[in-house]
Amino acid sequence: MRNNVLKINRGTGNKHKKNKKQIENRRSIAMFFKRLKRKNKKPATQTKSKKTLLANKAKGKNITIVPPPVWSFINNPDETISVLSQLNEKIRCKTPIQLDISKCTQICPGVLLHIVALMRNLRQKGVEYSITGNLPKAEACKKYVLNSGFLGYVKSNKLSFNEHYFGLKTGRNNDGKIVAELLQFIRKSFKYDDNKNTQEEYDALAEMVANSTEHAYKNKSDIGSEWLAIAYYSERRAEIDIAFLDTGVGIPATVKLNYRDRLSALYNLTLKPSDSELLRSSFKGDFRTKTGEKWRGRGLKDISKYATNSWVSKMFSFSGQAFCNLKTLEVSEPSKKITGTVYIWSIKKR
Amino acid sequence: MKIINIAKDFSKFPIGRNREDGESSGEEFRDSLLFPILLDSDDEILIDMDGTEGYGNSFIEEAFGGLVRKLKKEKMPVERYISRLTFKSVVNPKYKEKALDAINNAKNS
Image (cartoon, rainbow over all chains, first blue to last red; front, side, top):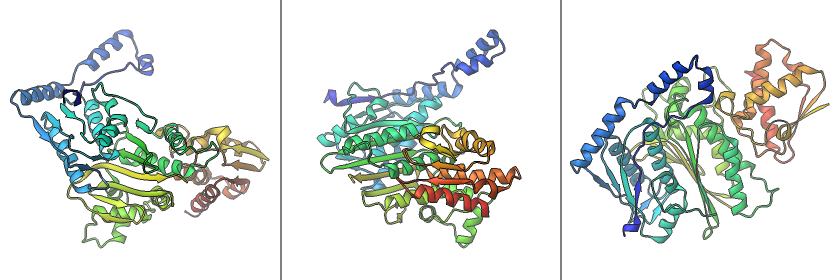
């Protein structure tokens, strides 16, 4: 049992890397050291954050969060989002958390991406946190967590890699090479030859990356403005599960910000369109006309068009307080909001 | 006739709209490759879209729709320049359609 415990690490604060360009631009060595000294000074919030965390630990204010056995956006969206929301809330209150996933029989890749994104976000902001956790007892689920690359982002000696997993990758801008690496994983898993066309996958992923980079974050230079992707090949199902996530403002909020005029025309002004209506409309391509920029906003329609391909067995998007089945454009509303946007889908061999 | 093979002459991984958002963007392709070649001579230009990993919509729109907007902004004769472009996309003909769509939409907006 002891071996089964892994420690999810505490935020380590800002790690400053010397940037060559910055150094070149400094007027003098003295100025450089002065600035470096100032930069290395830990922000007051971090110290306060650590103090609060330690005080909470000392007082025994730990809480245990037990996710549902099926911790999956697709198969149990309401409880899944609710637990992630609780985790998000408690971690920001500097409450030490014990994440007990021992009873989980299914954890979807979107959940792993979400936890990693949350921790990376806090770490980059220099916020102290503490999560300890264990591994699922169910063998398949445990194997999945062990091999997913998730443990590479937490303090654990149980890290292992498996050719059936495209380890978790993160990016901050439009990076076609990471997308191409994922395609390489798809080709290898399905044993496609080099000439097999995977352009449809590239196009969909390129749109997700571009939407995340260009629209998801109010300020692109903000800490934590990045996207994450993960994939897993299931031999049993002969399918690849892929998840893509950003922690930006979410599609419904972007639509509200960018398409106010169009919204008035589409909906009665007295009625506030729900997140689910906005999400469905976005994937239908209703918001193609942004005042002054008539050429923008077609990417989401292309993503939902990709979902209708026969080899895409399922595809969902979760954003704001809504989720959408991209094959049918059916929408639902969970009781809690999700941070950012998650895409989860499975593809079969063509 | 001049030929621009996007995969060989630019990138196998074209992605995104703006240069500031990453490498191999539509803006970079347009400004550093397509536009200078277009101005360089009166030759016809064949744009070969085969051989890349794919294209996001943003890339195609900014490269070709953006070209029309740039020509308009520079007060240059759009039709005279655009009529010299032809597209080849045998592996995935939808890319050619998207490029032509982007050009037509930009002309009409």
